[in-house]
Length: 80
Ligand SMILES: [Zn+2]
Image (tube, rainbow, N blue to C red):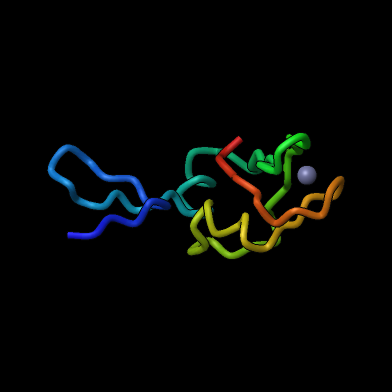
């Protein structure tokens, strides 16, 4: 079985689905933290994701982002 390094796995090796914006909102979370992984940058910001659809996984939001400081697309996201 090949593992996707962008996914999380439990002790049995089953893939844990990433949290979606919908399940995040059910927990009362309205924004996500995003930070730049470019070496020497590390720019971080908090995003309001109210305009994005519920089924979108939180990690997928990073694919839509670009660092406003250095222009890198190496962005990580997590629920705020
Ligand atoms: Zn950056």
